[in-house]
Image (cartoon, rainbow, N blue to C red; front, side):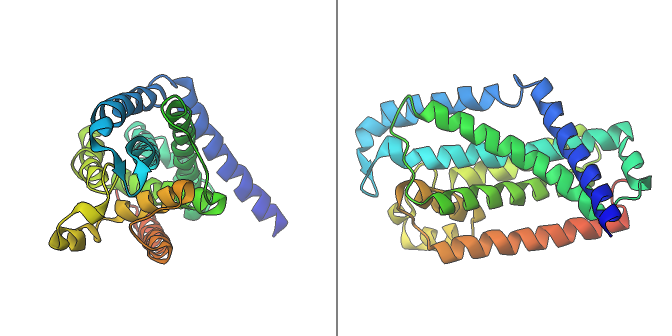
Length: 259
């Protein structure tokens, strides 16, 4: 048993280290753009527009949008890292080496997922450092903060993995981030409180999963949230279980990798 666990750990660690080395070799592409983009958000929305808006949920507008901007960069990078990396391995047919190795599908899946988690959290740290130049960064509840960002990174890394399995060409990898993640992020309470929405739209907003992640993270940093923490964790954990089970089922079927 110990021998199997040791082998599985080596396989997991190998995939994870490979993933980290892959995006660190080209760090200018995955890590620098989020820092520049978020700097522009802070300048335009925080300084220029925020000075006219004033307070939001009892907070300075710059402080209010900061957790949402950090979370937006985390989920986008966690998702894109796994989707682009695994699809590249599919395209180059190097994924076949993993399939013939005596390694469970779960080890392969978690290796890629935690590669995405690492990039997502690293990007979040970079954006947080950028935020220090514009506003005070505080931590209201460390455990909520870290658990929400970790669970959100896992969730979107799993989503990126599923995207990579279904993708048949490189264009397919960018469809979900462009047409799904970006709109949901902008409508997920990053720049406004859902209390400002009409009653009907507040109900619609409750179906946006990113709303719960942004507000859970905002509670961890600032102590304010438009949703309950119970709902936040329920959505995160429930969705992770569903996506993990679906990813394992797709791997077992060989979807996108054995045709």
